[in-house]
Length: 461
Image (cartoon, rainbow, N blue to C red; front, side, top):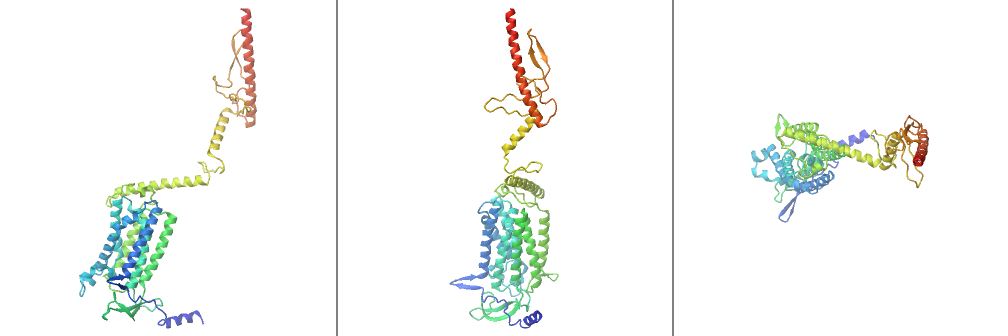
């Protein structure tokens, strides 16, 4: 049997293939309290986002507990913003004919617009960052992948509620939507229990979005590790990546929604937010914040409308990041071996002290032209130098006292000055050694002659 025959057989018998079944119910009654799968998925997503976000924040150098502190502001704002966006874009369900306005408050029945959640949640996070005096862009980069993972977990809640699905399909991975009824036999798709009756088979768009979110999470983590993205640019990539997936998913849905020029409002929102995220990514400060910048009160954050101050703060942050990068490179170079300023590497076993001694010896040799090593156990004699003075081992002119006590200038010997002309290292060493010996003989002769002269003078007197 060929592959084509197998494929035709699968399509022809798609009605007997196992479609993805929906849960028989999304609410379980535990005493007087209902346990709702949608709410449970949202809570699990929030907990995971806070836990992972805390780890990422500490890895960047932030203080422990900061993500949880800021979440106390961001989560309530995000839930309110998500619900407001949902009600505003699907207002007919609550304020149209046959709608019940009070149902707009029943968030447990599902319906959270991610755009409103991110927008108002971002405002809450901004307030929290202001209160705890930390930079919001860096905080956003730390929590971007965890937030998207929380969204993927939250999509499972849509699965239990049998919502956010697409058009009808006969694909083998189609999702079965069941009719649900309450205890009185009344149709209740949200709180009822399925009787096994399939209403329709649809595109599992919630599953498409969940898988897309997980792929973007992996991509963000890898990009962050490789390029060390900061200053809110990783958060912008998260927003842009999610918008691409959401735009495609919206094209597969046909449930009731507000339209603008025949296009679903969420498609418009996805396109506009995507463009805004890309613009921010392109023009925001490059690099990543240093550890010092993540501490409370480390950087004075301008208000959002103070554009010049924001640009100045970004330039300062970029300069600090560049300095930190140079310091890290130097530290890495020191760990792997020493190197000169011109980039040439020395032997790993050569110490800084040995290098200094070699440099000093080279400098002395360049000045004196010789290096004299005294015999072991003896006091070293002054080295031959070209400088005149009482401390000098030789002088360009030596004072010699004759028999009459008069002093005359003696011409210096060729070996008394080691720097009279350039010579090789061996020649310089021999010349210097000879010069020292001649100097000692000359000094001894001068001393004897001076003594004899003084004695003769005394005898004459």
